[in-house]
Image (cartoon, rainbow, N blue to C red; front, side, top):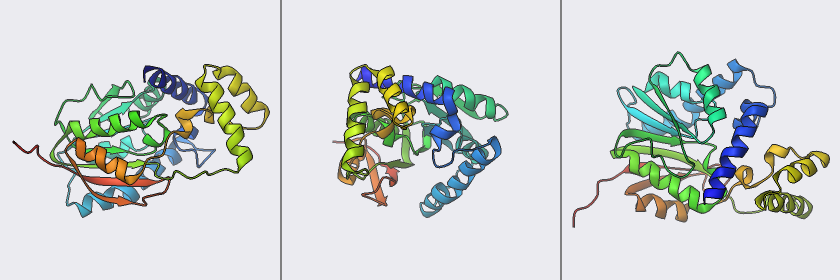
Amino acid sequence: MNKAKDTMRRDWDERARRDAFLYVASWCENWNEASFFESGEQDYLRLVQPILQRLQFNPANKAMAELGCGTGRMTWSFAQRFQSVCAVDISAEMQSRAKGYLQSSSNIRWILSDGETLSGVENDSVDFVFSYLVLQHMPTKELVFSSVREMMRILRVGGVFLFQFNGFDQPTMNWKGRAISGILDGMASLGLHSASRRIASVIGIDPEMVGKTWRGVALTSAEIAECVRSGRGSPEEFVDAGTPMAWCYGRRFPEVSA
């Protein structure tokens, strides 16, 4: 697992150096600072606010943690509404850019993670934990499970979680595309990172999108639900289950005494 974590850190640092905005939000290739952070605000209103309202959760005077803050695209929106924000990321390059953009927000605590644990965040210390466009890039199921369990660990009893994961395990490319991607991913996993990137560039594939730290793994809702419950969480609902943009939300429940 250490190799996978080191690879994640290396790849996301490289992506940050090349074009941080693009690799955080790859649906647009010409972000500027204003449009990038406005997209984060719109995603808060579209994805987060309706769930918090449904659960009758008021963010005022509450603490929250964001797993995978990247360059702070949504962190700013959280900082405007919550009393305190723990912004967690594995990439020092991504996080350094976020700190620069959000330096006027004094209620953000920046935490550099190891990709497996949230060791910088105390047990039962936040009221809300959130992750979006992060778990879908993790190269192993074990890393996803560990991240989900860690989100449950840092939640206070009654706290709310909301996170997105890839729930679609069917091929999204034709056989030729799968074969090429499989070869390049295999080369990267064998340590031939530079060679796989050069080949990708030659055949017209973005080299930053080569390897399992971009494509990640898919999980079923049943696997996620079991993991959440193992961390004393209660998954209230899955939204868009079975798709690449599957969501799970619910609350942390108290440990039952024997």
